[in-house]
Length: 400
Image (tube, rainbow, N blue to C red; front, side):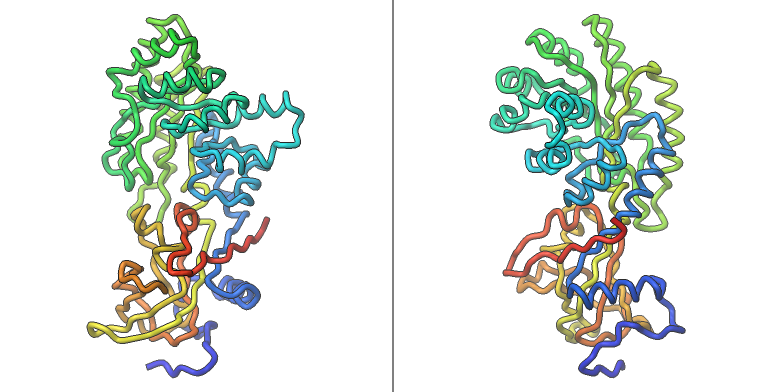
């Protein structure tokens, strides 16, 4: 049994095992001493490294960061400075990107938006289309009703047709909600041109955290066939192919390497498409997931059902929301070392739904001890609430 005192001992036993190195632990402890807990730490150098890795793996693919993964303005600024383009799915996301370009001369700004932003939500409110029309971005669509809305309210936008493709084996499937059936795709393209609109390209999304790389191969085959038929029937070039997101992050050892996926994609793109087609991708998770760590504090302790239970000051209504909405498990680890016990970890709210895990492997902890979770950068703090009056974790940036 750990002897608990008024002061927690987050340093742990230097000789004992730990997941984080001691140097990184001490850095996190200094940040906690300065900012308190819970604290959400964003490492911008890790984001830069991920961006460079993606560029090296797929040098012919243009990166459009999926802002929804983590819309923190400082992350968007870091990626903007690297030359990234952006996938936005709401006007607030668009305006976060806008902050980086608002001082450009108008002509230069309009050209940048056309080249660097795709509004990739296929269903858009009329008010959004009216707001977007002045900026003339690329926008996606997947049905005839959306086409009519775009013609009326955003006729200056360039169009990208979203296709329905296999999502088998992806952590979050999207095909049941978005995407035109491939059998209808060419007719939708013809309809768009008949309405005086311009279809610039096709897009697809194989599902978030894709573990079945055959989804991509099938989607590329489907896209190539549609492009050939559409160009034959309309006499117009399809200039863009947006291969979406889904690039896997190694949350655990069983996830296949993105390097393997990149080799497959590069080979299939070269085989199936003309050299001058623009290939876009929308990585979100890949760029930010491993860039963020959450540090929280044990605020309560009990024994239930024969095991220790810890209550921490973050939970599934806050940074651990990704466990609900994104289907990712974020192991809770301790700064203190010691023999591991199967333990339950709960969030701070009065709702039993606020259960982080019933099977954490933790040493015997004291009230006031620190715990942490890694790989928290994607689809976590983006969904934080103020439920029960508890605020989201404080965001702190390092290596900006």
